Length: 113
Length: 115
Image 1 (cartoon, each protein chain N blue to C red):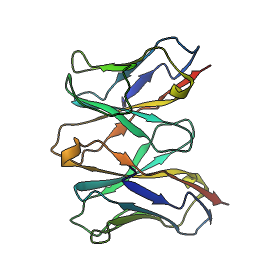
Image 2: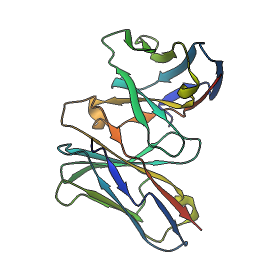
Image 3: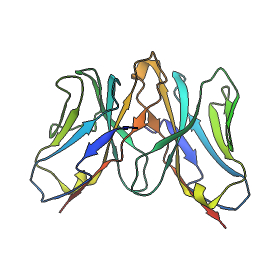
Image 4: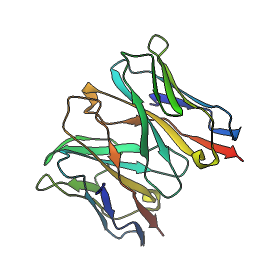
């Protein structure tokens, strides 16, 4: 059962543009929503995370928007750079799941120079 | 800066052989996780430890898979009688002790190819 659905599967953006990746979850017990960035041959690296008590969190060029009622959250990458080209995964975890993460399917982002 | 360390990074084995992967978590992280990732997919949870206790195992973890964390420090993941479907990247991760919503740090992964 896929508990976190991510879209789009792939995304191509021009340098300087805004990249937007969306995720939807089903389990209302989830209370922690991180985004991970993964380069080929590497492990996922935490990018930014949010809890449901806030609707938005910003760190540098990266922003998470969270809509609790819709059970959706999204990652916005402002001023996208070629170095941002990677696969991005949303994830979710909750108290009842021992903090183990349930991942989305991933979005392959390509930022053209 | 010592992150999560995994060994070996790559392993090619013949079908039917046993393989073992080792994970050294970040110091003082009491939680340790194993995930499996195949190409084009997100990581899938396999199992996790809190200290030396294995608290949860996914249904993905068949009887051929066994994980241990004998002293609450490093962990091993053994796959017995490997099958071609076991080919994947095996990721280890660790997190510090908190109630929930831990920041989970991943290692670089161990690639397994079963031929």
